[in-house]
Image 1 (cartoon, one colour):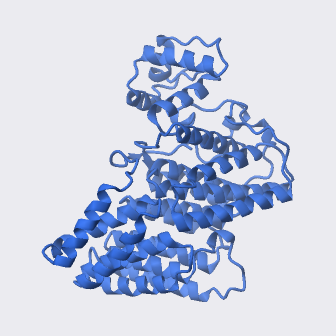
Image 2: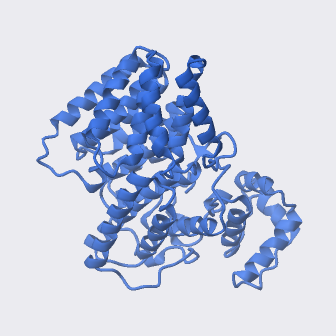
Image 3: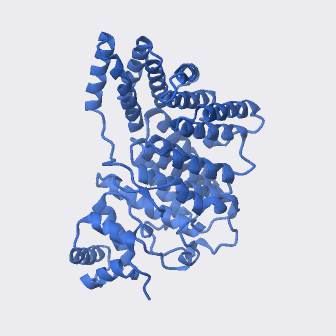
Length: 493
């Protein structure tokens, strides 16, 4: 019995440029290389997959996922192709493919990171894929995020045996997990200092190993810690991917991080992971989707969310509102963020993933929100200046990327406030350091600031600055995004 055309497969097939016959021949060759020489696919079978929704038997979905990943230069999973996984885990999957059960999360995490590493090795990038809208994620995850994970799920060894890079090592103990937790701290510090580009592959590789560990049995207390490590690494992989312009890849990592955090019993961490996706949406010009995600985050993070975490979430929401020119809402939301931050007496230690959100980061986010609002209301520029200066005064060592952002926020605010002398000074400080960082987001912000210099063309100092920025941008690393990021009806991890 068929279910109608497989539109997901049809859309991806069209992007490849193959004919149906070419795909059939390529599947057979690739399957033989993967150890399945008996496979004999023909044109008529490919046509049935696309036109009637026929689902091929294992190992064809894995072969197709690998082929499409290599052809399109971005990770394509079995679900992306419109196929359901075989085995017990598939029967527990929701109608929309979200959310994932624990064994599915471990399998998909391992598969996705393995294919991401393959693209790294071949020098490819994740460009041209679609990002899911905030509303699509909201509808799938709203109820799931607010409930506790089931503790009666089948043992993880029953997960899909077709997973890539399956783990064949023994269960890990407390010492190994402590070492993994320390590695997260090292990766996090490197990201804050140097940007995500240089260590992304290492983080993805570590996450791939942890995903494999989660497919074998561990005592519950160790399993929860492993899920926590997976959540932290997935957030880092997502943030580093976003930092270098791999937007669809980043979004999938954020969603996997939310799944992992929830399985570890840490709903605030799951909410923070989704808030990263919201920040990503604002950065690429989709604040409405960001607000949809933030409504989900506020509803699902739980009563155990600390005031400082809630303050951080408010700053993201304010940035999205600022992008839409809603000045009154921005000021109220940031005022609430300040009150929440001040109410945190420090009697409860913040989780490790919140330790970077200190007073400097609070001011940095406020500077960004007010500087964004200044595009709609120039009077907000002076407030942006104040917060950017406070952020710079409070930044400690090891946060060079944030300092670049602060200088760019400050320079932009000064240009909007008709103070080109100060703007020139702060812009040059950012320009001096930007080449030492692998973050493409810093270059995106530099381009935004450069556009503000146009009104001061003819000022000798600014003309010289513009020439320097133009020269720097001509040598800047290019984003892998090859076109506008498209909206999608749903997201499959």
